[in-house]
Length: 121
Length: 189
Image: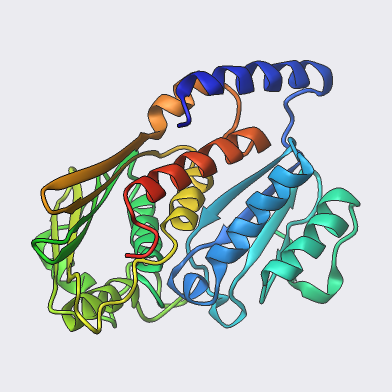
């Protein structure tokens, strides 16, 4: 059984790491989790991002969920917000596309143009 | 929506949008009573009696018409509950919050499966770090009861300033939920 005490170890480890490389959030991922997004598989998209973050040990990325905002025909929709750069919106996402976005965009810093449906703001 | 866990995700997102700080999610399966009950309770902005009625209408939405014209989340959940000899109740008070109680006849042929509860809960917990979630799963059969409780407020207190998206934390919450769901037989409900 998982115990709260296990978290103490995780916290100590994380704090050590933050001393070394700072606690900056480099990229914020926002997964659209409205009714149409969920119906089109947004939960799998969210899950794949979380798996990739855990597997690749990405400590400077955060993921959040948000509601619908009028791109229902392109759901699941994901925003990638990077400090000092224009927001990139990916559409019609699938777990496979998420893996590619993680490798190309988040790890290597190259926008995956084929999946982009909007930019800016 | 293919299963109850997807509806649950949708309904929890409503609570988050209603500015809830704390959301309680309870799933109870009772074999003797032949009942599967899902309760979502939030401390969000709440609704007046008229809005509660309106929210069950598929052509009502709280968003601007420029953005979308329909609001299908609640009506679809309600329909699916009623199709399996269940019920859908929504109680709300402006300024206090909303409680949603959705019942299904456990062995009804048209009842949708519970689905992947873990993915729903993991997503909302990590995707909304500003909201505290209290999760409670109870499975009872022949007088025996198995239950699982998870309070993310305690987890966050323990973590201090470490974000929930920290890789080891994702794994911790993922495993906790998995154990809880297995221990309460909620995988194949």
